[in-house]
Amino acid sequence: MTTSNGFPLVLGLDTFGDHEHDAADRPLSHAQTIRNVVEEGVLAEQVGVDFFGIGEHHTDEFPMPAADVVLAAVAARTTRIHVGSAVTVLSSDDPVRVFQRFSTLNAISNGRAEVILGRGSSIDSFPLFGYDLADYEDLFEEKVNLFAELLKGSPVTWQGRLRPSLNGQDVVPYTESGPFPTWIGVGGSPQSVIRAARYGFSLMLAIIGGSPARFRPFSRLYVQALEKFGREPMPVGVHSPGHVAETDEKALEEFWPRWLAIITKMSKVRGFAIPTVESFRFEVGPQGALFVGSPETVAQKIAANLKILGANRFDLKFGMPGLSPDSVQKNIELYGTKVVPRVRELLAVSMERVEA
Amino acid sequence: MPKSVRRIAVIGAGHVGPVIARMMLEAGFEVTIAASGSPENLELITQVVMPGVQARWAKDAIAAADLVVLAMPLHRFPALEPGPLAGKLVVDAMNYWAPADGAVPLFDDLELSSSEIVQRRLAQATVVKALNQIAYQDLEDGRRPAGSPDRHAIGVAGDDSVAAKVVGEVIDRIGYDPVLLGSLSAGRILQPGGPVFGAVLKRADFERAIHAAVGQI
Image (cartoon, rainbow over all chains, first blue to last red; front, side):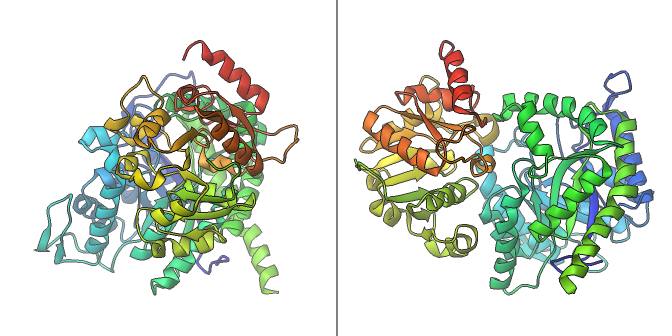
């Protein structure tokens, strides 16, 4: 089915490699968590999810620095689901290597690779690789520029300030059928929206707090900016955290302590406010950015927000550090078997109304 | 020093600036916005994201304004020319949080609030710290009409009591209860890591959080 912006509806799942705990709440090893993520990607395809994304992170809570390696394992065991980053922290990576890794993933998966470029909520890669966070914007701008050149194919000639130039060089592997889909993850800066349009990259709105409706001007800005730059319309997606269980109560009960723990921990580093019961209630309610509840609650919220935001894609960031593999698998199953068909149904009805 | 404010210039068009500009416009002020480059670069953004706000060169926006809001990333502040801000009432909505945004050597004096350092550099301006403590994604949703029982608070810290009062009136007009903190130095309470940073609190809860912290800061 197509959506209000004319593109096919895509419903995906994202993970940050959230460190899982066993039923007795003991942390699993990083290695076991990573093996579980591979199984979760395979399960996502089995239950009918369109996209499986893995976001690069570098901490004990999210031991997932090499998302493309894990995506390759998922790709080897699936045939239909699209696999991609969510996000690749391009500023602290080398665009040539990012292109090579995802072009390789694209080869392994028979053209199912996608990449979402951005900063995400991860800042740990900067000190790890010797980059200064104060240079973030300059690094991102220049590296996006190089990445856009690489996608056009070899030979590549490019000059910049922060990375050695390329002079008619070959960057392999070549893609079989043109550039793979590339998105820019945008958290709230209109200038980032303009940048995505300027390069002709798709727009992924990362909405992790506050009312999703406030992003509506951004999708309008994106459409108008594409037009201004003489480009064809492009897909618009939404990425938000959440958790699906059989009932609202169960989903909230499983999610809340894990959410509270991770945000409390991050607040020390990032200066976030510690969630209160009141702020959590707002975020899981109809106006907030957390998609937590029964399949019906989550499907209604996804459908409503896709309509409000003029978007054709929704990726639920599932899991939270400390959740058990059982609870995470149940979430994936319910998302694929209940939420996905229900969102399709809700949007089909609303499109019929528009067409009538 | 203006007794009341009519024209507001917002400097910075990233995450925060457009949100502040839109709120100011909806509160009935005349609002201009400027970023580091030409106003043409901002034309589409202003049209779509904050219709009614006028894009300007920074120096023109500042020259015409009764109140200037600094809403740029803090690491860009050292490059801002102090000259055009001489004699202006300036609201510092920026934050210094090195773990997330990188170190800015100018701001590494831990004895001073970041707004005291801004004031020291903008010696001819009157700096008031406000609009820094509620996250940009919560600012618009957090507004309530005057007198509403669940109205939220925004801290206003300034050494110049007249300036702080004028800024407090602007805060009140956009939909928050201003809580005056008495000095720029006290603005440390509003900073990252402080008791109200990132929180959307009703006035009573806000004051309680601040009083509880005063002994520690």
